Each structure stands twice: as C-alpha cells, then as structure tokens.
Amino acid sequence: MIPPIASKFVAGETPAAALDHSRRLNDRDVGAILNLLGEHYDEPEAAASDRDAYLDLIDDIARIDGDICISVKPSQIGLDIGETTFRENLEAIVERADDRGVFVWVDMEDHTTTDTTLDAFEDFAREYDGGVGVCLQANLKRTLDDVKRLADVPGKVRLVKGAYDEPETVAYTEKSRVNEAYRDLLEYAFEHYDGGIAVGSHDPEMIDYARDLHAEHGTEFEVQMLMGVREDAQDDLAEEYEVWQYVPYGDKWMSYFYRRVMERKENLLFALRAVVSG
Image (cartoon, rainbow, N blue to C red; front, side):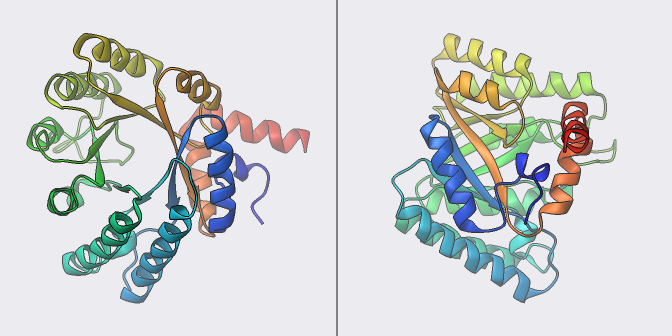
C-alpha cells in the first residue's frame, strides 16, 4: 500500500482508487486527468500492457458521469522501441477514447521526442476531430514556433514551463527566461487560438496573467495542476474557471513521489512534517 506521505501526490495503485479520487475531485468541481505511472519501456510487451490498461481505464471512465480524462506518456506506450510501435498503441487508445467520449492528453518528454510526439498529435487530432491534447514546454527554445504551428489544429494544447534537464543548446536554463517564454506562449495562444488552451502551472503570476489575457481576448482556457500541489488554490480557481487535476496512479509510484517531493521546498517540508508527526 502507498504510505500516507506519498498518497498526497499519488491517488493509489489501482484504477479503482484513481476513479474514487476522481469522483471526489468532481464533487469539488475539479476535473481529473488520470495518468498510469510508467515510462521508458524498451520491451513491446510492457508497452502493450500499459496500452491495454488504458483501454480498460477508458471503458471504466465511460461508465461514469464525470469530468475524467487520461494522459499518456509516449515512452510508456513504445516510443523508445520505435515510432511505429508508439503510433500504433496511441491510435488504439485514441480510437477507443473517441468511441467512448473520453479525451486523451499526450504528455511531452525530453526534447529528443518532440517532433515525433507533435507529428502524432497533429495527425490524430485531425483524424479524431480534436479529441486529443498535447503538452508543450516553455523552456525549449523551439516552442513558440510549435505553438504557432498548432494554432489551427483541433484539440487542446497544455502549456507548461518544463521539468526536464535539457541542454543549453535547445533550452532556456534561467528561471527568468523561462518565465518570459511562458508569457510569450500565453500571449500568442490567447490571441490566435479559438480555445483549447490549458495553463499547466502552479505559478500564481502565470495564472493571473492568463486570467488577464482571457479578459482581454475572451479566449476560453482551463487551469491544470498536479495532485498534492496547491489544492486550496485549485478549489478557489474552480469557483470561476475550469480546473483539472493531474492524477497519477499505479504501482510505479515511488520514483514519481520522490521527484515531487524533491522538486519543491514546500513538498519536502510537507513530507518531513508527516514523518515527524507520524
């Protein structure tokens, strides 16, 4: 079982636990984006297993009247094995989701996967009438061009600052420069997109900037945050805007929990207080 400390950031090990968490979120007017933990598989059997798990999850979601969708990592469904394996598994997921009325997000990983991921997203978003979304990372120097490229593609785009340690040749490494790039992406998206913008950030300044751009341009948007991070703010924002929580689950929770705890001082302090009080 997942210890109480980790359960702040991970919904549980089973789909049932993730769906229970989703129902509780929906009761708070917050949507759930379910992600089965797993990545960088180099065996087709492992990728196929997680593909099938997502197919079953889509069926489960379709039986629930709620705001629940899924998010898939490319390397989880075969990108490290080959582009063909990745696209075949992703299409199986998107096709099932389209049939069941479930939205599919495609996560973005390190910069070496960007072109393959965006090509697949664009193809499937057009084929399945916008039932797919993709994540773009502000720290990559190429991303403004990518946002411009996707302006007329149906579907959604999630804008994040970027969590991968990328080389300076392809990425901005200074926090202030990443923030500047994020603002530029928001400005372009709110000015040129018809909607489908997801602000994937816990930064109050960026969320406030998105709200200002919404007031100026009228472009619809949603806010996305991680489970366990600024949940009070999620509830507050949900009173006025569309809010979704990214909800990881599965038995590969240890490495994910470790990353969440170590990446932010507030998360580390939470974990330490839990240990001391326990």
